[in-house]
Amino acid sequence: MQSENGDLTDKCVLVVEDEYLLAEDLRRALAQSGVAVVGPFASVAQAFCAIDAHAKLDFALLDIRLRDNQLVYPVAEKLIQRQIPFAFTTGYESSTVFNKYRDVAHFEKPYDCRTIVKFLRRRL
Image: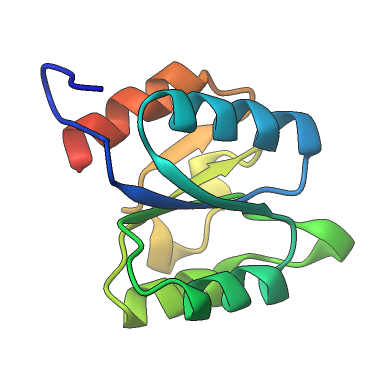
């Protein structure tokens, strides 16, 4: 699927989100835009396994607080080490995000999946 700002066909995006309905809506919107979706995953451990298993990840969308009160920041660190860009999709305001990640794109819940797809088209 081609857009005026970018083609998402053959792009691979990791989704880390523990709220099933949000995760499914995001997965569906990305897939309809041509994205190969990896996930969604609801824990740091699952996300680590997915990162290790996929040689090509173009981007990641990360919820900050996951199941069992886990924070996604270790996943963000692993993505930084592998030079994989990411954005946060979270219920937290940007002012509550760790200072280290203040410049990372941030989509507050409830977000519109179309907004995220448009962002990815510009970014990728």
